[in-house]
Length: 366
Image (cartoon, rainbow, N blue to C red):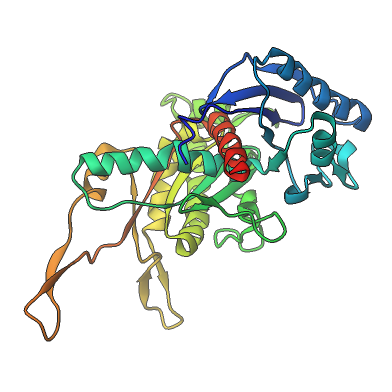
């Protein structure tokens, strides 16, 4: 499926707890100026009217009829049936609201709703990191190509999605890849998001800092301290990002053990990757131990940060050798060094989610 040459139009929505942003896409690109509306999240009737009005305004701007509506909406949800469940940030939806069927009945269009982490991963797999990386490998004369991708989003929460061979994993209950609930060996009594989120950086910094700071300070504030050599709390800020990176590396190691694919990182905290990525890579490429104390690599594969050009060159290198096929005079190529890559999103989470929503609708329609 080539979404870049497909001329069909899909209406989209970026749904947040505060604002809804409506748009439309053709050939993987936005074709109108996005329309922003307050979500009215605490008033169900007004919120549903806002959703209908927003899509109607988009429809009025289009020169042709769209083929579908496709968008990300917070969970928990029965995404396959378009039913939104008990949402912390959208309290009016508690008890279950059939949002998809309502929109289908009103606009007489198929409606597809997914989790933002899923659509982020799908967009990166089809139009972001995965094709770009495979193109770089081809240009480097590498025989390696990758078809599997785990995408994670870092921000207020820790989200994720998994794509294998251009297929998005949804799960039997529409809740596959809920990475935030994976366990943490750094904090065994907590789930992963407690170490991989905005609040994790805030908590560690406030515990370590000597100065006085407001409790509502944001990671960008901690980042500014971390890169300021003259700030007396620089060490505390660096520790906050280092611990964040260790928790992220722990979670990614668990995910990559299962998926054996490329990892791409997006979301609001992705911009601070130079502060947390070294700790994440150290964790992924580190060791674990048997009960007798024997040290083993944490992963079978070696993980490379391909945002770093030197590491990409090593990642793309040819380590294969010719080995004899027993009982014959023939040889076969064997690469004894399995490897994977991690990198930051180049699209940005918002664009990747939009591309994922567009592609998901077109694939379903086919």
